[in-house]
Image (tube, rainbow, N blue to C red; front, side, top):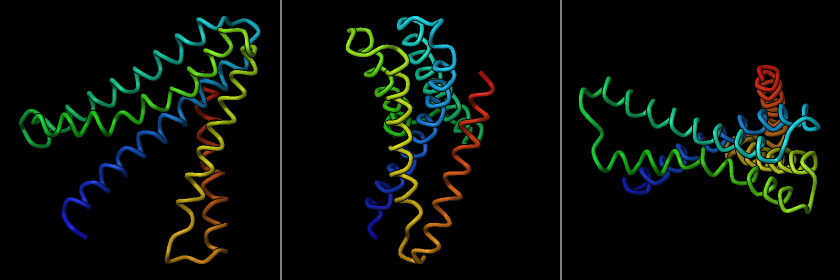
Length: 167
């Protein structure tokens, strides 16, 4: 595989890692919001999602910058800044479905609980598609893929549960 194709593939891998992390975190936040939806306003839920999304993005950018400075004893080049922005956009994009659902609630099309449930459902479907894609590789059988898929679902469930309990 050409060097440029490998770089592009690695950027996509890094982006997906950030996107999956963002989806998992925001799903847990939405579960926490749903548990107290009757006491919340749409504005509060929206602010929570925006602050969580950009807080994750900022922390991730700072971690990349700091890790680079520690490991290389130099600042990030303009190319590396661009790379980090491309990769970490996955965290920001993970928040868009939540904001879309909350916007629908704000416009009166659905209520807050429905918006949060719909976003959780979208997140689950998104993760299931990603996990199904990751479970089946060229090297493994269908049986192995099912076992890996079930293991992924269990791990994701535990992560969401732990993150939701922390709220």
